[in-house]
Image (cartoon, rainbow, N blue to C red):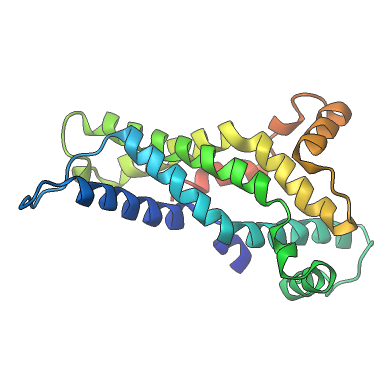
Length: 216
């Protein structure tokens, strides 16, 4: 549960992007002005995308632990490992013993490849949706329902755009348990060859829930 919370980045990225936008605005203000310049939906999307690059440094280790826990849970159900070996501490301990602290950054490049464009689509979709619901009014006047729908639309844009990258990233982080490292392109080609070109878009119930969770 803790790992799931830590691996959820919209709040963290949102806070970072807000700081970036405010910094941009403060530097753009004329002397003596007390009002922030208005920023476009595109600027908000770009700020969220830029902030996600920093969020990746925190997200990658928690994503690695989460993916390995999910794989070990499946292994436990099939009887390949005994109960008690699929805990957060056992995964963390195993990574440190085998690869050291840098082992938590297996799949960093693929995580970065997912987060940077993904959150451009997330914040872009979110802001465009808020603009649509505002219809000329201030976005700050929107109620909870339009905001909820806007968040859901942004989350859908994110996952539809980057789900194949997330699929490859997860496999890289899980396969690294066995020392198998073929890189992003190698893993992607293997998925396409063995499971078909649409394999990365075969959504399971967990990913459908992620679309809805992104709206919160």
